[in-house]
Length: 622
Image (cartoon, rainbow, N blue to C red):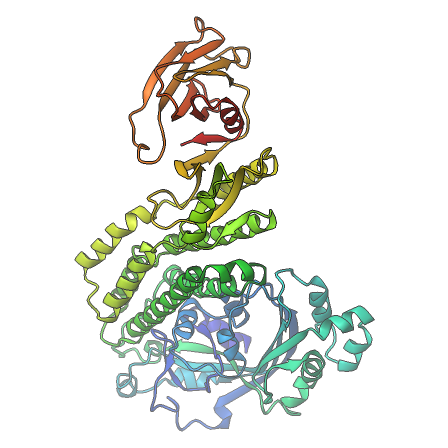
């Protein structure tokens, strides 16, 4: 065996069988990883003396590291091209290979997967038969590129244990239980090694089974799964007669006859195949994330308050599924085409990847959208945990704002109820894609509409602002007249998340940002047309100048022109006066320095000293 294979190793390709009925002498096309129909063998007249068989009795049992597509494909030792072919539906996956199509793991569900693999023998064509070759007329009559010269037999099985309870926590105890199966296939030994807690834990798990031998209806209990794993060796037969092909060795047809006119198969690059696989994995995971967000037990209460959010997640998931199906179809069409050479095939696949990366369905675009939705849910859950009132409709919001007993209302807002322009773009892309009219000019128009969607608030920034908002609520000294709420405000023209401030039923600012108290300056006095700031000059002796910007603020005048005063640090007094302010009005003030010190942004109301001093501890305006 070693001499034969080693002498031809540089020309051999090893391919996973994936449950396909592969046998010696069969013709194979590596360009699309498929058998050639109508050809049972290139050597129809060879007898049993031309088939050499070597015993290969080995068994491996292990726990998979994770549930990714990469880890599943790695378990089958699949080449990049074979991975893409299988994931795009170019082959029927039976037996253990059907595990590749097992539903993606929910992030609310603990999963442990056990992989059983046993090998029985290696069959191969004799070196004499291979040296005799085949007539050029036979070889040139087929589109095949290779012939199967060796088959590795055995069987595989995958036991997928899923927790029946909803939980995002990893159950390491169950993983330890499953690892005990890897040390022995005896059901009795496994059961006797479990303590009472481990036995109780196994009851919570169901097992989906994918096997090359035997026929069971999934799911089964843990106990049944252990019994099945122990019976697998006997199911192969006493002589391994029920073993199936696990992998095959392919030999180039062009090497069998020097006059063969077949062109050498350069093959599509592995890098390209990995890129295609990563796109499919990305789409697959995001579809699962959408379903997890909709069914998340911790968010179930708040998500039912906003049906529009659920509808958006469902639409997003459907668009992703439509796009993935079309993407798989296009890959399959390119791979299966027999009218293009390998250079054209690789060029077409590269163009497909490039189109995806430039489309609304690119990893960056879809990830940003999902991050925003995750942040919206996190905001709602944090507010609910902090006992902040979550306003569920615009009518309810108006009642809170116009409550005569409530003087000040601070509202942490999101735009989850607003029309989602990104989903509109996705829908347009799908419609054009289905009509096969996604020409370059229309794709450019779709990209132009995506530009305002590129910037989204980061999860960390929003949740950091929310913490300050919650802290302000918890230190509220006048809860009877000052209220903190959360709401969805559609179409306000501001960022995805903002804080709106209302006073006595009127909006003062629609875009407040939150900051903690600073020692740079404090309000010392408010008059009907001026404000005095006491500056802490000892805070930083390297400050050379102070810049004060101010303007009137309130509903309808958010775009008023900023005025500016510059104070020299050496000559400025401890108290700076900003005069010529409009009486009985709100004003936005910003104090900055020439250094990277935190700026102070304030909202003041002339002649409302007590109210203003409360505000300046909490708020600043962007």
